[in-house]
Length: 226
Image (cartoon, rainbow, N blue to C red; front, top):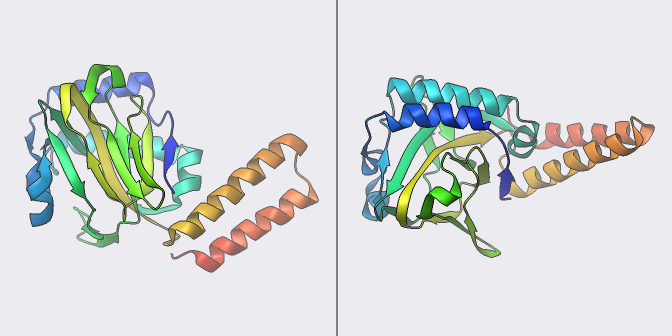
């Protein structure tokens, strides 16, 4: 399932993040990928352990914790601290797939990457190109979202970032391990949860909404990994 998650950051928060990033020192993005990724990656990143990145990552994680749609879709168990990248002057990232396992920087524990997240921090009108293209069973989908919005998609998907030919594309990106490993089951739970919420908003709390909520949680018990 691929999902547009709007307004993760407010305009004021986007400005705060961009001020910090525009003053930061960037490094070659190939430092954080394996041999395959290094062949097709041309961008810059904030160093993984930079103090600025850590503080900005905390701001993003706090915003995600308050975002009901993100939680419903992702059912996050653990998240990799957000990283930051920048593309300009023709920089791009060719077709690739993200690694299945990431090591958490502080604990050294390993995390299975079920979902990939890209949080856009540049307005679409500020740069040309730079579309995130995600390839799945139904074809290729290009994404270029307003600043502060996020796209969530299976980490198993082939994807690329098209060359940026004008301006700068600045984003945060990270991965998460979900409580529900299987994407199809996670999508079913998301659809059920959203349907229950709409039904409750229309008719209030009824015996039927209580029963459906029970089914949702029993399915989560059956499929969830904690």
